[in-house]
Image 1 (cartoon, rainbow, N blue to C red):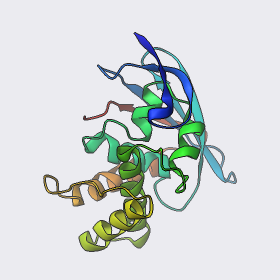
Image 2: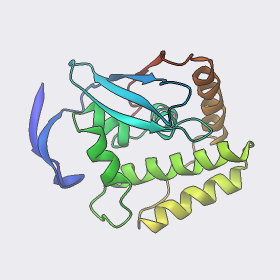
Image 3: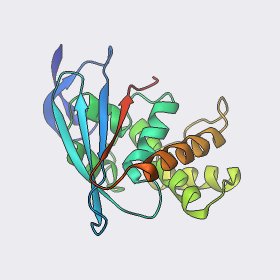
Length: 187
């Protein structure tokens, strides 16, 4: 079932979004050639529609796969992947969520992005520091004038451990092959 809505509650976009009752999608992370600077991510919704985005190689788990870890673990209804699963174009959501000067971005989208940024920083450092992680997430949400995600009910270390597990799986994918992940938000 689709619902015609004005997407401006989340961003400035007019389009058809699927209702939040139950939506899911498959993420297909495609590893390109050894000399390539980008891999690709396909988002295949359960209704068969899809969108895609490039994944720059950054020396750790790609940013959009970090979103998978965060949004499949935390109870967020309006994170990046949830918006894509509902029918939004991945590149449109990516540009909008990353625009720190856009006050219309929904609180949960900002929180998800902030947690992803903080988690990615921890991955680059090679070890998890809870205080540094929480401070990074706090600063990223404060820069966008939104509250930090409430971690009182979850140990953020879980995110780091799951990210390391997915990074290991991603490293095992040969060039010109893919990794498939099922995504359904926890909210």
